[in-house]
Length: 624
Image (cartoon, rainbow, N blue to C red; front, side):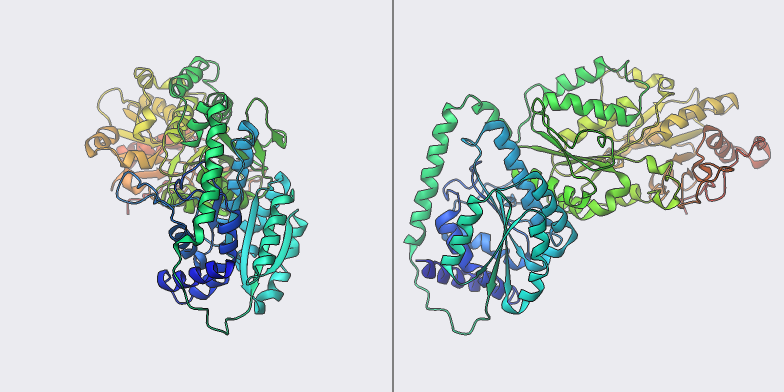
């Protein structure tokens, strides 16, 4: 029987795989797929979205044809199309992205399975994750970091399978000990031996460790036997899967958590979570009105853990949750530390989002974005809802090393399609941006947060007139209108919006009417109607203010605008000039505004004490 199944898969590969380079590699894994699907895989062809089905993840494009072939041969019903122009991608069966991302996503799925099982019990959540990839992916940084996290977290429901030729065995033997040292069970089998494959799969189901199976194949010499179409080959597997699903449905009907499980399994939020969320943080608004965005976001996460039990937060060694215990699971709250392994953490977050049932969030620093970028890009390509809470204090202080200043990160993140970048100014904008990230389900969202307190937030009376309206939902809004006809518009994000409010007062004393525009999310603001954007930005000259590179600001400042920010990494701070390269002050903004709206002869003289723009921080006309 395994030989006949393998022959059927071989024939289908020749029919479905257009790339001749990939076909031999796919045939290497045909025997493993035949044994897994016919004897072990927990699935029901009639219900491809059964919540307790096994997940089969393909990481390498070499094997991308196998899930479709196995679905067709086993008679699986087609997945329902997504609302829109594109069909829903089979996230539980394919994750062909940057090398190693699929293996990391499979481990993230295993973490999601373990988390759901801890909440609902093994009677409702009792499936396994199978990841199929190329052996070269095992040595990638993301795979090694994810494997280390799997060993630390005891994710014993994941099995990774790689295929290779006998000529590649020596190279693989140098990689496998790394997985053994990370707490994995490692086995090598003959790719053409159903008995060895079945024994390895049985062993992986019995062990209490994550498992890695290396299938070693010899080059094809003899032609495969002739193919004979037999529709009854998969009848036994179909009956086994249907029986398992019927038993699971009976258990679900009797379970007291049936309604909650179904809600989470279909990625639905509680009925009144949004009004409860808004009421909660607005009741505490006066108490946290002058706190930093990082503290407000942390307070918001504590509230969300109570309102959304599906929220699962992974955190790095640095970030706003770095001081929590290594593992905290109290009252349904789940926060797991990933240490410095942020590359693997980001891949696990994708797997959590792909699994369904949980809401994935991660906390780290913005300087670590470069290591998370491949996973972030994959999440953007596949419309995965992943929320990142990133602290950007290094924009203002590089811990004595100017190279730590991530001045280019905001511009690079805004350039990535389907990624929403939020940079809130104070506690209210932080809560509003968190709400928007929770509501956005078509891609990843990033919040960059600062620890600087919003002491001048009360200087924006216009915002209070809007009551409970989420002003950040339109990406940008008038934080404080000019008293009279606008002469200059100060456009800022994050803490610099608070500095712009202070500069507005100085300009008022100098006889210049200035308006302040807060621009927490460029992507949402760009999606608004042109009339709204024109009303917010106005026709007066504009000054952009942000503690980062000015790349991209020309789209909002126009041809006559100026930018106040950081266009270089600067120099290391010294006792004589502490933080000299990040001297963005209300006085400096005021001077630049006066230079913009008045002739140079009418500008204020430079005050004593060296408050002028330091070298490397001059106002830059980025509209050219």
